[in-house]
Each structure stands twice: as structure tokens, then as C-alpha cells.
Amino acid sequence: MENTHLQLEHAPVARAALLIRQPVSVVFEAFVDPQITNHFWFTRSSGRLVQGKQVRWDWEMFDVHAEIEVIALVQDRRIAIRWPGLHAPTLVEWEFTPRSNDATFVSIKNAGFSGSGDEVVDQVIDATEGFTLVLVGAKAYLEQGLDLNLIKDHSPG
Image 1: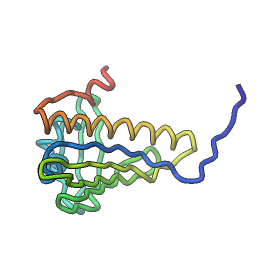
Image 2 (image 1 turned 60 degrees about the vertical axis):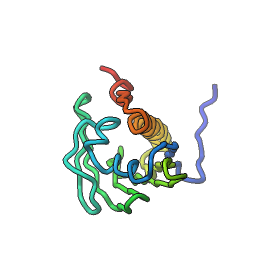
Image 3 (image 1 turned 45 degrees about the vertical axis):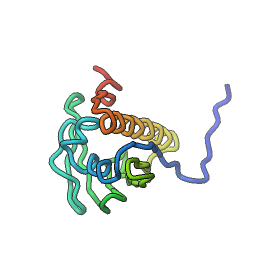
Image 4 (image 1 turned 45 degrees about the horizontal axis):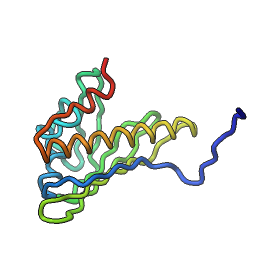
């Protein structure tokens, strides 16, 4: 097999999206309030998301954490954070679009990856997979009250 190098014209972006059958205020709050978020994503947080604030998220089962900075918070519409990347921080944005009184379309975009072409592609694949699991976990918890342990079970020790 011949070794070829992939040439990209545009920087790749990780995307995940899913309809959650709950009102936009409920879904938005689930990503802002760590007491809710810890049911489907991280296990501990230093606090609620507040624009301009830095927050620490912990995944205690993996003994890892992330320091994030909330750069935008528009009630029931948008969250943007600076997320630690492999070489430099990336931008993660959530958009919340009401589809009816009891459904919200959530879209997550993660952009600004750096490194070699292979590293960028690997990071985009990783982020897409991770944020898809987060959305599926949020859907199960918010719609059915189920803790699926998706993040924990994704990489069991």
C-alpha cells in the first residue's frame, strides 16, 4: 500500500447533534448546572457555568480533569467554552434550538484543533465521538431519568 498524505482545504471541525425531548430551558440548564451534568458527562465540577468564569471538570474514574473557560453564555440559546486541546485550546460551542414546547435540538461544534494533519484528524474523530456520547447520555437522562455510564464505560480500566 502506498503511503499518501492527505491534503485538507479547510480545517476539520467536530460536530454532534441530537434532538432531546425536553423544553429548551431544561436542556440548557442540564449543561450549565453540574449537579445535572454529572449524570451524563463528568463526575465533579468546581461550579456552574457562568460567562467569564473558569471551571474545573473532573472525570474521577480516569483521574483526569479539564480547566475550561466560559467565553459565552446566552440563556437557552448558546454556550461557548475554551477547551484544553492537545497543543492549544479549542472552541466548543453548544447551540440550543427549540423545536416545540417539549423538544430541543442540541448541536455541538468543536473547532480550532492544532498539530500535524494526522493529529488534527485524530482529535476531530475523538471529539466527535465524545460529544456524541455526551448528547446520547443527556438524552437518556433528561428523557428517561437513566444514567447510562457512557463516558465511564467507553474506556473501562
